Length: 226
Image 1 (cartoon, one colour):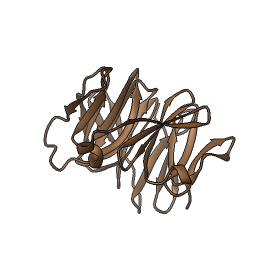
Image 2 (cartoon, rainbow, N blue to C red):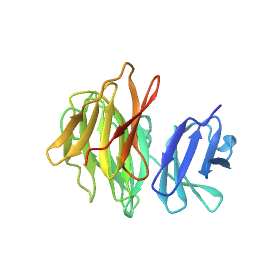
Image 3 (cartoon, rainbow, N blue to C red):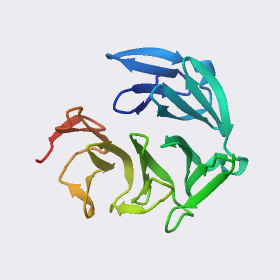
Image 4 (cartoon, helix red, strand yellow):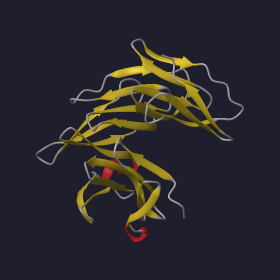
């Protein structure tokens, strides 16, 4: 099984899957750091601190990986395990994202749940991006984009399509099957982009001059407008 998901911030990049373990990618070389015995039923991986990873498993266990050691950290309460999308550390707080909203782990060990505004019955998280472990942007399948920071969960904007990926590098980008959106002062603006195939994701390059757009058949490069 190939490692088919990426977890990255501006310094580190990891590739992972439940079948093949977790690899750290350095200078285009992938080094196995957590073997596949330890990643069975792994649901999501996030970067917590400088060299610490958070691993969420299908049964609600959350493990922490630091200095080569993997240890059980805490458990998501049972009634939420099926709906738990991912775990993040934002500032000094551990945050679980559910399809219904954001659940924060309080210092007394209890959890506090904030619901997304609007209909949550059919809401599903499409994708999430963490900005420097300071804030989260959460794209729901119906086009609503929420921002989580400082224990608040305001609606950041709505796109007129179904998001499939959200990325940040200097600007916030949301891609759907066939459109690209850029966050600006007024919410989200569609960027002209025509493709024969569906967009799989859009990522800015490191210098933040171009946007790499991956479609089902090709890689396209869009020059950013000044």
